[in-house]
Structures are given as structure tokens and as C-alpha cells.
Length: 156
Image (cartoon, rainbow, N blue to C red; front, side):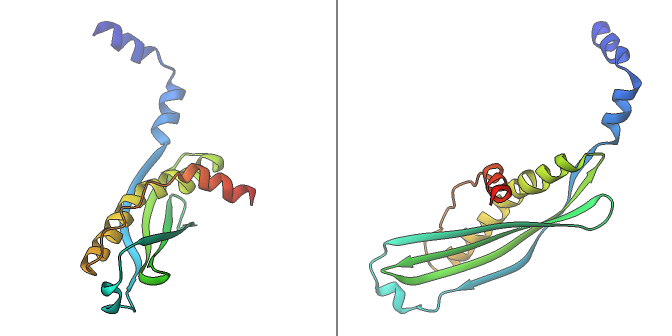
């Protein structure tokens, strides 16, 4: 234990100060917009269930002040069977995040990848719940690679 204390004490004060000023936290997670449609119900329930899922993903962010950022994860899920739309769900899952002491490149990465990764499970649970309440099977969306999505957005 004495060795550990010596190691901690031997760190330069500048490193401790720099580390102490960096802050990342989740201030709030909320649903900004939500829609469920099943215009073919109840006739769609007579069809043989052979679902084809289409997922559209978008991420946006806005700086609210010096340390607060809003990130909005937009998911549009459309499930078709026999080329007819069984149901469509649109959600804007949002969060307010605290970011202090980071450079612009790091902030860009956190807002484009880390924050959507935090928001995605909330959106997925809501989508599954809405589908089940509409008496459809839960879509159970696979995880999304937001790092790759962010890189793709930069290129195109």
C-alpha cells in the first residue's frame, strides 16, 4: 500500500489538474418524438407473417452551452410482410450530455459515437415495446456500429 501511495504522490500536479477538469456525464435521457403506425391493421394479421425490416438511422447534435450538448438518435423502423407495411415506428431518442475539458476532435467522437451508443438501448426497448403493444413480434434490433456510421458520414 505504501508503494501505491508513493506512485500517486509522484504524479505531476499538472496531470492531476488536467484530468480533474475533464468531465463526461449523462444529464438526461428522454424521448423527443415518437410515432407508431399500423394502417393495415387488422387486415395485416390475416397475412402469413414473413417480416422484412428496414432501418434508417440518423444522429444529430446541438451545443446548448459551454458544457451541455443535446444528441438526438433518430430511428425509423418499417416492417413489411408480403410487400405491405405491417407497422412503422419512428423515434427520436435524445439525451443531454455534459462534456468539459475535451478538445474538439474528442467532442466530435463522443457526440457521434459514444452518446448514440448510450441512447440506442433506450430507443431499442421503446421500439420493441411499441411493436408488442401493437401485437407484433418485437423487432429486436441488432447493435449499431456508430463508429463506422460516423466515419461513413465524414466520407460522404
